[in-house]
Length: 282
Image 1 (cartoon, rainbow, N blue to C red):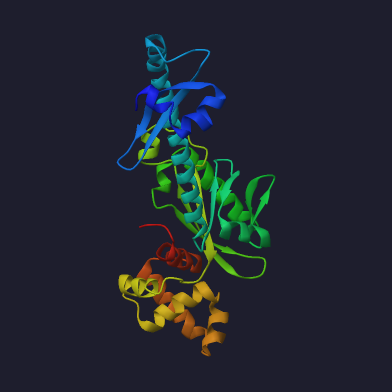
Image 2: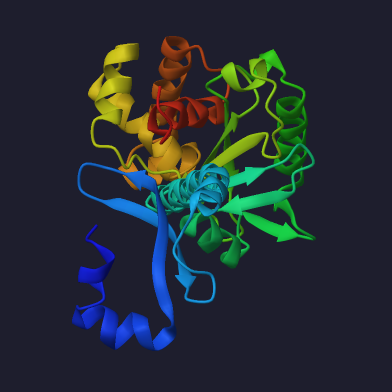
């Protein structure tokens, strides 16, 4: 940047470079943006003298490899940042989220999912596999995970919802979402996780969900209350006791719900609410 004889008179040269026997510096720009630049350089010792044409040719051969190394390093940093953002986002969900392979092996659980596993009330991790406390539910989950691994079109892209009951009597809703359909399968990407399972207590956390259901099926206010009670309270006797009315009154409303929604069982009503309350994008 400045003539050598001028450089040798500077304090920088006399106090730092000269004591180390450094007489020249060969450099190449490896990255440049509007606000920064990165340079790779090699100091020349007095034993080797000032940089000559041979040294410059060697730098021209090395510099492209250094630039590629910088780009590769940035890609790794970017992927690490993406993963960190992904994990932070999932931990922000109030629903427990579990990524599993087609054999039900647990690949990842978010913070809410780990909290659910810690109670062992609904789901547990046994030998690294996600296991439901209820044997029928566990069998159904095994079928869903296996089907997702095969790209079963029957699972669709919205997944399958199912009701769960914990050992403490609490009601939960599980929503299994296949991860092997659509663009991901067409791209031929090798995937370990075949399904995402979202689990939450059977409560309508979203304030607009109940009104959406009511409007969709033209439910009366009382019918909507009974529908939500099926999810949050339980069967007809429990609901009747909570509302302070006769069992027959609740049965009448439940029959009307079956007719308007097309459900055949109370479990179908729970599944219906689960589909509207799911944290997944519609």
